[in-house]
Image (cartoon, rainbow, N blue to C red; front, side, top):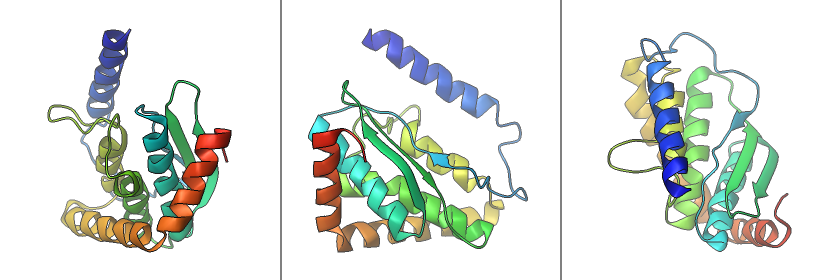
Length: 172
C-alpha cells in the first residue's frame, strides 16, 4: 500500500510540474478562493502541531481558516482563504502559512520535503511564488519565511491549544 501511495504522490508531483506550462503565473492575480494545504501523515501529535502551526499563522496574517482536520489515518489538512492587498503581500502571507507547520512542529515529516521531489508544503511554496515576477520571488520567499517564523515563535501557546483541540476532536 505504501508503494502505491508513494507512486501516486510522485505522479501528482510530475503532473503539477508538467502542467504548469512555462512555470509562471506572474501577472495573473492569486485566486481569491480558498488556498488548500495538503494531506500528509506522521505521528498524530506531530501532525496536530504541524496543522496547528498552519492555523495560527493563517490567522496571524489576517487569513480566514475554513477548516482544519486530523483524520483517523493520522493525516491532516488545513484549508484557508489568504489575505493581502497586493499579489506580493498575498504571496508573502501564503509562504508564511505554508512554512508555519514546519516551524511549529519542527518538522515537515510526511510533507514531501525529499531530496528528489518536492510535494506538499514545499511544492506549494514553489507554486505560489510563480504568481510573482521572477525577480521578486527570492525576496518574497525570505520575507514569508521570516513572517511565519515570527508568528510561530510569538504564539506558541495558541499553537499548543489548537494542536490539543485538533488531536482530541480531530477538527476545528
